[in-house]
Length: 118
Length: 110
Image 1 (tube, each protein chain N blue to C red):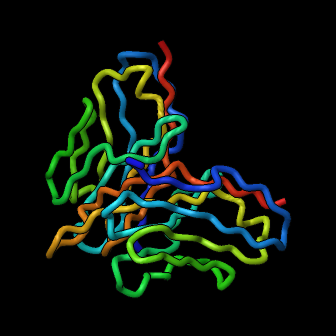
Image 2: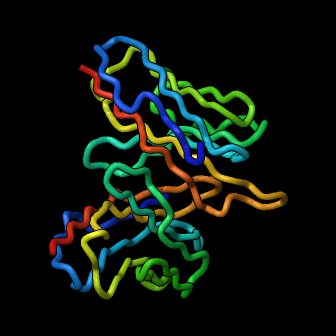
């Protein structure tokens, strides 16, 4: 597709269950980001992948959160043993690096996955 | 650490009114600054950016000037339209990440 695609768009789960959220970035974009947006708050950085480099996991809030990326394509964000405070919209974004330079700062966002933990 | 502070919304205006959405930042050095917009039912998209002090970013009638003396990047538009109704996010770049403000909802009525 032309844009960043995320699934599911909505997920309701019970406390303690595991969830997986998927992101398909724009083809050719080497950088991929996950952000979280809780109600009434700003976007909170979670994790960043760039090519084959080790991911920047500095924003993951706890060891219940993990993410993987297959090459320069699909990424999956996994939340284990979900808690009510995990309820949020999880946003994925991708960005294009050009040779010898850093991302320009233009991130292309998906519409997000809304997670509700009961 | 680095942070971005935006005015709380919602901002409610009539069509053709003048818009200002305030944004200030705290950061070491002079990071690139951005405004992103999220229209209803859509993902965030870049509206404009400025990469150094005194730069002015502009797009779709919106403008913002990078003011290092006041550490601000206020968003302005001279005459808003109903179609401008959206949530606006100010952000700064630190390393390869964007740090966002909380967002400001703009509602424009005919």
